[in-house]
Length: 280
Image 1 (cartoon, rainbow, N blue to C red):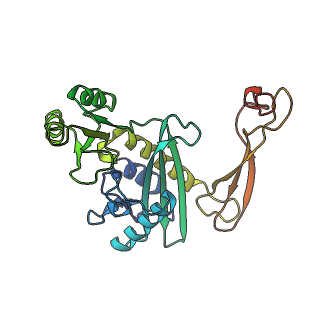
Image 2 (tube, one colour):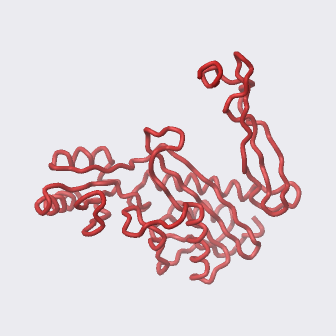
Image 3 (spheres, rainbow, N blue to C red):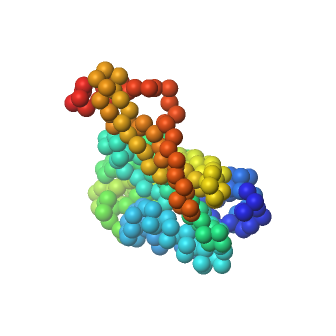
């Protein structure tokens, strides 16, 4: 795009996210991506909780991007922030939630996307034998995906991260187990040790580039996208409104222009199984 063409774009990461983000951003926006290895993104929170995240993910990704831009003397940047835990709609399965934000201080733009994926190996458990350790490792896609070992789930000292070698995993477990008669093993969710998460970040980045290319029909500002959903698709049996999406609201952060579009699916009515009246 013309407003981004040939500009330098900072990717705020210390975990190699540029491997999947930079090719998309450079191809679509025409930018030249770079990273700042001196900028410590772990200061905003770590998955192993030595540093607690002090704000919600959206606030955190904004702070991360803005401070990285300031530290790098740049006016265009992208940052991402991931969270892991129960899916907001399916509480019994884990999900990966990724926010990716582009900030352009030169043109006063802030464009954000949110990607939620059920494809994640996020897990952790206390193990009291090597058999339990290797069973967990296999399920966690080790060694292509890194693991973390420590004394207990809440212990914040003596954490060994980024384990991708079977011998290191075995020796680290034996050392911790020998001192504490148990160990806690968990998946390393940092992007460079987790190809599954990296793929979700890539998908989120693709969504960001698509949103950047969506311009406001009124003022042509990039980032014209979905900001709300109107629910109420009628039940095919009783005609009552359901909680299913009927339409989406698109709006522009710059001029306030908004439009509503019917959700692009083939259904004109919802199955009664999703109706609170027919299936309370």
